[in-house]
Image 1 (cartoon, one colour):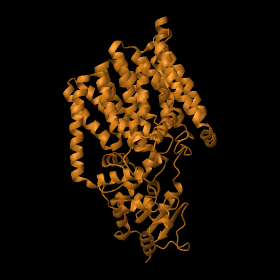
Image 2 (cartoon, rainbow, N blue to C red):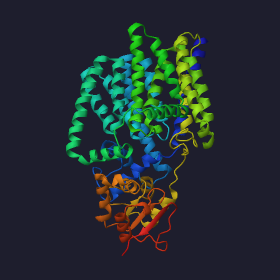
Image 3 (cartoon, helix red, strand yellow):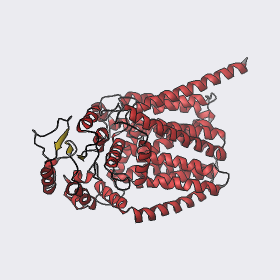
Image 4 (cartoon, rainbow, N blue to C red):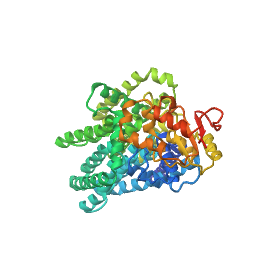
Length: 549
């Protein structure tokens, strides 16, 4: 009788876990792709229709990332909509599931089935149920590739073969965005936790592949490096160093990320429980590894100096993976971990639904409470891990993790609690009016865009300018120092050499024509008639000016 009851309970638990995971993934899939992703898609789509090759188009992202996004966008037909965004999400979900399977097989070989299930399951869920502002950002793609590198390094029986497979994946972590190279180091550290020999081979392979990528791209893609240097100059007029005010911004951003993604608050406690299992030098080594890995996941945010929430994509996934490992390997800590996760996540669900003004007013005490609370929970976990007599089944861990990943993906949740983009909310596609404008102009009618790329993605009209969203002209309009950069001069050629555009599309809250340099204003006035009488009706803040005959 007990056997039958136990089997039934396990079955019901498994069903509950699957339903919880599917339901949370469905909730996450309801939001439209974030503006940064639509910016890239819009640039690739409209410049591609205009005959500009993917090697030549500028979308503020490196070639490796452009190739990833182009591959995902290729099967999509039709203008921007909830349906097209969902197709791209489903394609990405399929890739995540395959990468998670590789991670499971790899960890199973080096650490056993229990560790593989906990680590791969939690990591996969964190990637699938990613906050909308994380999903498909270069930083998120870098994390996905880092997970692939870890799995690939551990799957084969022979470490040298794993290195051959892991090296290219780790190289791509760097190639999709130069500032994400610390995430590749985290992947190598994780491999080392499982098997130091495999880590040594994987490190050697990664160094070779990164060197090859650097030499080849420097030689054949010089503009990629010019753009990188000019983009860095946009953010930092001088090299980034250790500044106290920047460290304060980082501290605030970490807390902000923890409020939005409460799984971050579980990381110290889960890491403490895992480290407490070890003894002697291994315990100290475990503590060092945990701290170093955590700091490395923060390095991209500090290095870029903007502290956007998606810069912490690696931190969220690492926290989920460590929590999954703690749940799998520390049965006595499952109940305390689950209780902590439910309480903290419940608080986050309440906080992120508060009005924007309330969040800004109360951000400081809330952020400090989360950060201090996370450290206190780590101390408690150190002493309580393994002492709880009542454990929980694995299915409970799945349900709890899904709950912890839920706050930032709900419809209406903010992109950030109180930092940049705190007023942007998750929602459905807002592009219907712009899609209709593109249809009225004619889907094959060439235009010149002075817009952020989301407008391009919605309208879909082709452009022959390789700067489909002319960020250099936009920044040069209000910053004289940008006009001296090579990218600005190259972008200006779209006004002097591109004579095919039949309309000028201007997003007035993004590009200010009155602030533009005199030569740019003269070129625009010479080619296009932006008088009120001539303008084509368009949804604000977009105006459409016909070309002069």
